[in-house]
Length: 168
Image (tube, rainbow, N blue to C red):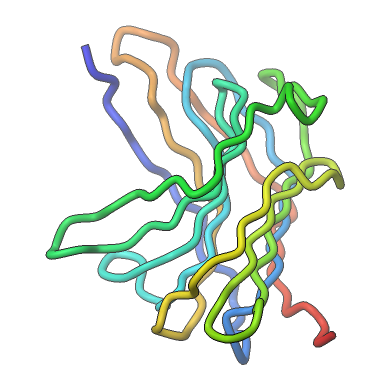
């Protein structure tokens, strides 16, 4: 039986950067079940209709960077980076509080660099073509991928912040 995916989103941070360059950070803990936690930075500023860059940590011990966008009306999830946390010397347990951060920055010539760090250690990085649209909605979220008969997945977030990285 396919798990029923449910997404719960924490409100966007009250800030509008001058470009798509942004650093998001939070402390998060998850409880039971199967699912994941993540951060996103919109490429277009419109979550429901447009594009965004998303970083995930999953109960399957993966770190992901995902390019999410609509194509011909259908939402697409393009996993551009998949890292087994064990390969970077990490394991995230249920009820373990972690620091999670995502940084999006310009890589020049219409390109973006997206990075995910856990407890100060970079676990995933991607550089590629940026979305054409500008604007930047940001959020923390969790999703439940547990079978309805299984243990529900839940996550909590604290100290969610968004800031503009200093120009280099």
